[in-house]
Length: 114
Ligand code: 5GP
Image (cartoon, rainbow, N blue to C red):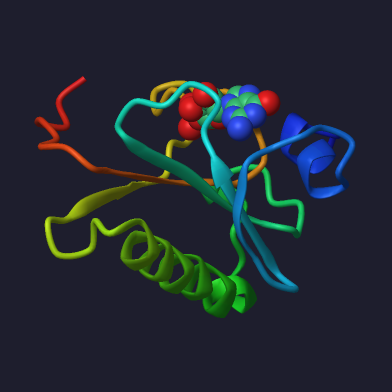
């Protein structure tokens, strides 16, 4: 897999507003936020798309959701609610080919139709 912007953020070659980190995951604010809270949760492992997730990585993906749960609580949006989104490939409008989960909240979100 080629180096992406997110690999550079993991390696601290590019700056980011990091809100969560552990040995397997990193989470940082989206540079072009679509909601008052817009955080990207990524695995440090290089996984290009949802299509590339392997069965043995199921726990890692679960940890991404738990990290999002914690970040939402830290950001004060857990009770009002939020949205978790994975975009995959062209029809999903994926532009960065390092797996990431969007955490969006802090306002009333609208429908998913795009
Ligand atoms: P995708 O459409 O691939 O699901 O979303 C990629 C997201 O990455 C977009 O929301 C975009 O704003 C965000 N993004 C792209 N480049 C950077 C960057 O250099 N830093 C940060 N923090 N976010 C980025």
